[in-house]
Length: 217
Image (cartoon, helix red, strand yellow):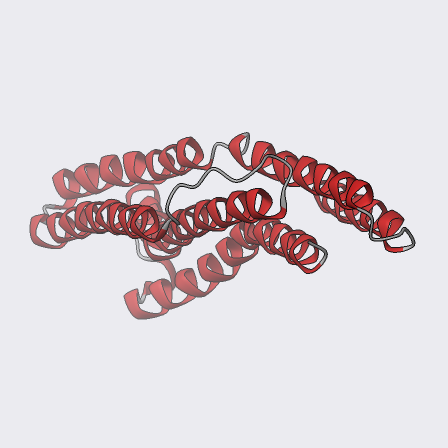
């Protein structure tokens, strides 16, 4: 449904722009075209705002980190594996802190690279280009946040699966830590790649729409 919606939105933009290609290059036609293009950019901006990726990222971190931390503490108490489980807890905390630090860096860099504020005429080419520039920076931030969350899941969800198996059944899968973790990482990597890739496709579609709008300004 989401893919069909994005495809229809792109086709709608193409259809609207094509209406002006057969018109004269009069100022009126040009102004009308800029009005239409700005409306489309505004719709894209609004759709991004409604995605709530920052809150979703926070929820995703909690959904994995909280049960993993609980299982590691339980595993530590039950089997006395203090060193290995404490190391895993520290690594998970460090990964979360590093992800948070990286996002702050990306946001700061994006703000520093943002074009100087100008006051172009509304519905003008320059005004639309300015909005598109802000939109591209926003997408850089959102994609970076999504990438960090996906890496967190690919790295630590296999640990959760193995520890759950150990606590629940009292043994390591396949009676081999190397095989268990190797298979768990392969399965988790494939699963989370396809899961998060759907979200990345949204930004690719938006870039395609912005590229088309830019080409027709």
